[in-house]
Length: 374
Ligand code: MG
Image (tube, rainbow, N blue to C red; front, side):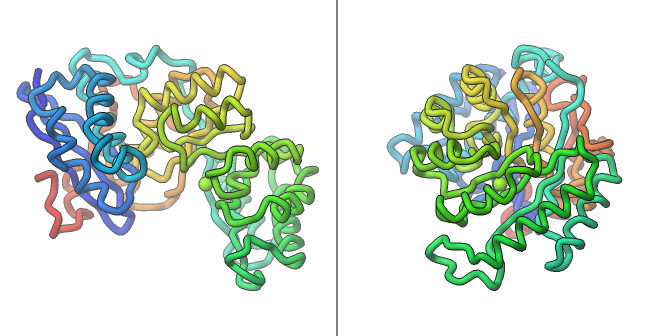
């Protein structure tokens, strides 16, 4: 079997990047790359095509390395380039699974679990009262989710958006809001908080101190991601579990974070950190330190289900992110409906990815001027 073409479709309003790989035997693989500037174009760039066209798509690890190596001298292979490679890699696994008649999770070593627990990201309350944050959380919990996330991004009253400071008023608001949510939820419903890299170490630790008694599953991205030593310091300075990882690429990119145990939980995004096998390698590296694995995910259903195959196949999976509750396009993009039931996604049993892209829905959502898998 040989790869004959790679093509993409950029959707809107969410800029999901779908990748299609075709073969000379008629098998077609679908993947999803993390959206980012030009990812839909990078995925079909001739420098990525060269190592793929004419090759057997089932040599996935080799082709991943060939793509990576091909981009080494062309601006390196992180960021948008690795997102494009990740989407292609997923499509290669889809083809490989179909070719052997087994689901992707089987090729990744088999499954630990039949259902993948997902958490719903609520962002913020409908207004700036702790009560409205709690009401939103209760409404999501009532729909079957037992893990829920809120953001503590800077509020309009924050003093200076450049110095990573946070006012005492804002600290009080966040601690109050999170405490009110915690009080409203069932004790076994996990609550997660995301700080989106906005704060200085000393200021986010003031917030963390206020949250320590609330049994949170984690505080995510308390500071910017680059300085692993500072992340380790923050992690050791609070009893609150710290989670980070969505801005790290490949197993190499996670090595220092994991070896220094700078984060209690890691959250790679499989649509940008290197795809499915690299996602498994990152999980296994973390598992050497007993670190739970909770992938970041804002993908459409293709990227989300692809991530589920890895989540099924690794021992240390904890919970998978989900952002698109009540998003008609998310729900319409696959022929299979109701992928999330009671806060869980059931692992597909059919070959390859195990869900089918609804091409008509995708075509309607496609940015027309860029073409549709052409
Ligand atoms: Mg996040």
